[in-house]
Image 1 (tube, rainbow, N blue to C red):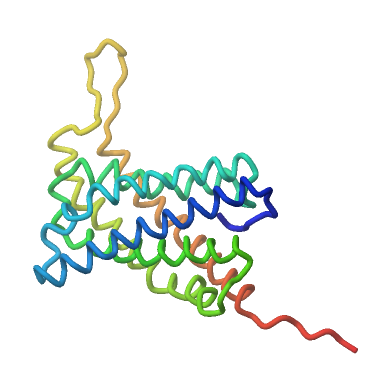
Image 2 (image 1 turned 135 degrees about the horizontal axis):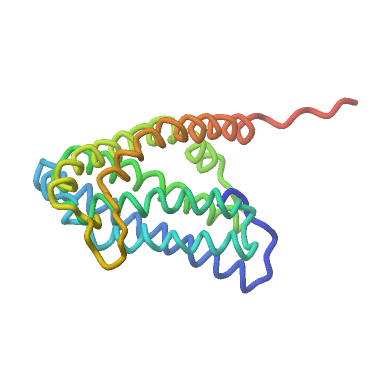
Length: 225
């Protein structure tokens, strides 16, 4: 949700409820992450600790596509779809089905980066919808990404990398000939193809956020007398 439009009361109430719920959900995930790391002193078993909550709240972000589609927010529908499914795809297409990835170092990187990012993002949107945006929230929204985006992307790439041998060996989501559809599909090569996609699109998104940061945090230009 890149912007919030003036809404009728029902639409605004829904958006506020959605953002509050997502803030609470990701906060719950964050508590689970911190609790596990503090209690066990290791990231082993961390994914199992928060799996259900992660799957639910990350998948719930699909609603943001409909928010953009129906004009509730000023987001571009295609861009929102790509952003949402990049995360949902990693969760359901790599992390959840490949258990060998669960105890790898990419998981804590992803969980820490995603959790902090989403708590700040949804809380920021809640304040915007309420018409009150504290300066600290504005600063956090357009500053923490400098560290969190690379951390999250690194975690995603590591998860992809560690999943490859297991996907290749198991034939996960792949379809081989002969079959009734007379069609072949190799999921292993789909995952391989994601690596250049990261190289192409991540710098664009990252530097776009720097442009947004400059625009949002720069003091308003003084009017000439």
